[in-house]
Length: 461
Ligand code: F0G
Image (cartoon, rainbow, N blue to C red):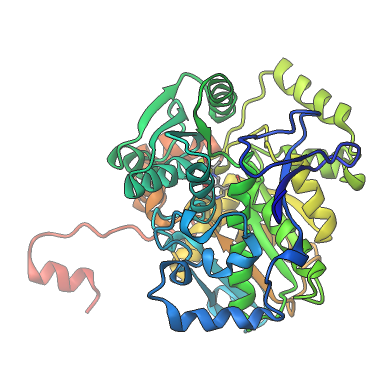
């Protein structure tokens, strides 16, 4: 076996599999899989600071990539197998104005802006890794189910590399237009399933089980390896100091899971001396993790978590036909496939889970934008969650906090325009049914005659 392998996360199983097997669950027990490394056989730098040297060799595409510049920490491919399109050129920015709005001290609040990726969301961090594995195993067709960003990312990697055809499964009427336009433009075969994301994911898994199509959803353990690097870049942005908190929106829980794994490994390798706390923020209309963790006491429990509890929760959800529903369409997911890995991340990171309403999400999103960072609604959940956790006293004003802004503002312009425009019909159509009735950050355009005096008057000059 090589220095890297796949392994079942269930403590009673822990079956291992070769890197070149295409798996999205353990064939023995059905649990999720991790990529594991024999670290003694990997030339991991002694200090994280050593990765900085690669800034001076950026003409090498692997050093240019914000994912593969950390390649020793995700060393499953050979260098020549890597599929990269320059992902991960993202930044950590201190935002004192936003900090003051949410009751944090100056110098404590940072935004990790993943909207800067080639396809406009954090997904590219994972898709470069999944595409690399797809190439390693000679896949010809890649596929995913998506609330929009995964499909945009999959399609861009297929389009730029020319290595694969790609098929994306989306729910009906459940995808923001910015994202749909990307999948169509990049040439993905796009299937609009009559159902929601949870249905689309169930169907794409069935199709990939039956046919030689490579699945790129976050049940793919290789994809999650790429997403670990978001955490490396945050540490880098803080001069390799560990923050007190990381806040991330929770949908399918791939990010949360990979962040937990990143910190677990860095600690094990002695590259950090402590692990930050993780806050996973659900939308109230898609709050399976919050319900199970905070109301049913579901815990990681060293991997021996209560599968019956999870099963009966889903049974009741099915019986009541309880569908996910939130304006933050990216995280409109009721059956998060990485639930169990997210429980592990919560334990590793002494984490918390909260849900926030759509009103809180759209206001937080608008507030982030008014302070210079455009992001989509799901990303707004982080600042809404921060406000909650500040109000509860869980996060202190002096804590150093990083919010991961997962997707770009232009992914969902309809919602932004409906929020700002003050058009009662648009608001009633889109926002009122979701319980959004207040618009404290609305910045509507001013209608004015085509006349200089009228314009000057409108400007109050
Ligand atoms: N934020 C954005 C912008 C997303 O697109 C997603 C997930 C999440 C947060 C949630 O991340 O699943 O790792 O918990 N979007 C997926 C998609 C589901 O299909 O694009 P997660």
